[in-house]
Length: 479
Image (cartoon, rainbow, N blue to C red; front, side):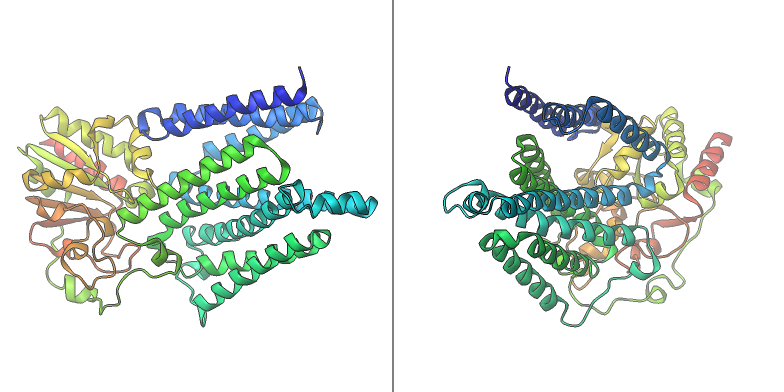
C-alpha cells in the first residue's frame, strides 16, 4: 500500500477520534475519557507523520515520546489547580508559536529552492491559479499573523493570570485602539506583499511576524482580570486557526482538521463566556469592562453593616434546615478547600439536608474550573447546577458562598451604572440566609465592592476557605 494512503487512513481515524474526544469534553462525567481519546488521536497523527514521511527514524520518535511524556506527566502532577489557567494560556501560546515557526520553515525551503532553480520555482510560487504557490503564501501569511498574535498575547495573559506586578492592572497606551488598528493594517499589508512577492518571502514574513507580535501584546495588555476567562477562550481559538492555516502550508490534512476543530470550539466557547458575562466580544477585545460610573466606596457599602460570625454560630444557623446551596468560587481553588467542602456536603446530607452546588459559568479563572475541583472529590454530577438554580433560591434556607464575589454581586442586577451591569449572576441574596466565607472584604476581578456582604440576611465568616469549612464541619459534628 502506498505510504500516502496509509498516512491519510490514519489521519482519518485520528480526525474521528478528535471529534469524539471533543464530544466527551462536553460533560464532566465523560471529560477524562474525551481527553484520553484526543490524546490517542494526537499520538497516532504525530507518529504516522514522522515515520511514514521519513522525517526522522523510529528511535528518535520513541525518544521524543518519552521526553515529551515525562514533561507532560511532571506538569500534570505538580501544577496547582489555581495555576491551571496560566498553563492553558501557555499551551495556547506554544501552539501559536509552533505554527509561526513551521510556516516560516516551509516558506524558507521554497524560497531556497527558488535560488537553486529560479524558473521552475518561480512558476510554482506565482501560479495564477489555485496552485501551491498561492496556497503556501496566503496560508503562510495567515499562520504568521495569527500565530504571532497568539504567542505573545498568551504570554501577556499568563503574566496577568500570574498577577505579575507590571501586568496586574490593565495597561492603556495613548491612542491605543488606533495603534492596534495601525498594527493590524500593517500586518495585512505585509501579508499581501508576501503573496505578491513570494521570492522575497522570508524577510517579509519576518517583518510580518514582528509586527503581529507587537499587535498580540497591545491587544491583551488593556484587558482586565475579569475578562481573562474570555481572553483565554479566544486565544485558544486563535491557536486552532493558526494550526489550520499551517496545515494548508505543509499540506497536512489532520492538522487542518484538528486546527479547524479547535478554532471552531474556541469561538463557540468564547460566545458562551461572553453571554455568561453579558459582554460583547468587541468590549473584551477593546478592554472595556462596562459603562462608566461613579463606583461606591467600601466605606459607603460596608460601614457598620457587615456582620461577622463564627463557626459555632453558623453551625447553629444550619441546625434543622432543609435545603442548602453551596456556591464555590476562586477562593475555594486558592485554599484547596474542595476536600473540606466534600466533608461539609457529606455531613449535611447525613442530617437529611438537601445540598446542591450553584456554579456560575465563569466561576474561577477558566470555564469548568469549579466543576473539575468538585469532580476531583467525587461530588455527584447531578448536584452541580448552573444559572438554572436561580429560580430555587427563594426556597433555599441557607446559601454558603465560598470565595466567590462578582458572580454573586447583586449590583449586576440592581445598578444599571455598575461596571458589571446586566451580567447574569447567581441570585443568592434572595435566599433566607447567606453565609459568605472569605478572607476579607476585598473586591473581585471587577474591582468593586459587593453589597451582598452588608445585606441584612448575610453573615460574613472570615478566614482561609479550607480551615473555615473544616472548623464548620467540626462544629456541626459537635452539636
